[in-house]
Image (tube, rainbow, N blue to C red; front, side):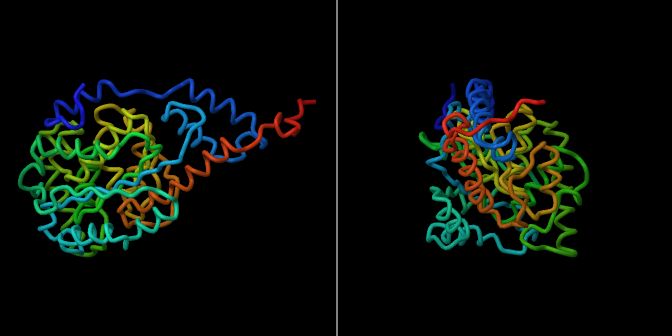
Length: 345
């Protein structure tokens, strides 16, 4: 099978998708059996019970484990930023990467609070993608190499990986991807991003519509081709990390709108490709709720966040850890000497 280090074309990426593992049903059964024995009424911990089962199912082991969480932030620049679709200039991407490395960003503090390993991956920041209204954003080789780079973030021993991005104008790419993938109108998918309003927001919507009009028919619903034409280096890296995580049996937490849009491209290849992923939080970017509904995903948190940089995904690690600790640490009715449910009269 093609390895991440040698993938240089989207053909090779597609070959990897033929060997992706499915859910571990034995581990799932063990999780369900243990959950039923714990000292609480059935379902009393709500989604925490479901998350513990999900962790076991996709880690392929029982009990599930969450000792080594990783947060991966991918950074890339977009040619379409030159069209004035963001409230901030493109150089902010590089400046924020330096801030991540210096420990001064929100995600640094959130990772510290959940004891997660933060890694920042720069993707050709000095060379933005091509403006997708004029040509495909990336060549086949560029897209494949960005995906392969993302795959290498999934290293041995990681128990869960939280994926996020940094890139001025990436909500424009995310909106274009969603419009091409799910239909509707540019207005339904295009939001303020970094804070654009009025005429600038209207221009952003027009640019999203123009990009999809240029590339949508040629890509013919092909998720990887749409990612190549409308996405960005960091979006491709997120998609690659999602694939690598599936291969390595590592559950995934997706950050907000842009990260979810990047992963959504994979569903055009197989609707089950995001079964090992949870959406960490509902972004305040308006289209994120619409995207989550399209994917059948219910975010774990809803805190009106819209920062990006994997901030919501990092925070959701605490929820997963709580689910695993309850599942593995609680006493059973038998071991605690607590009476189970009474038989019906």
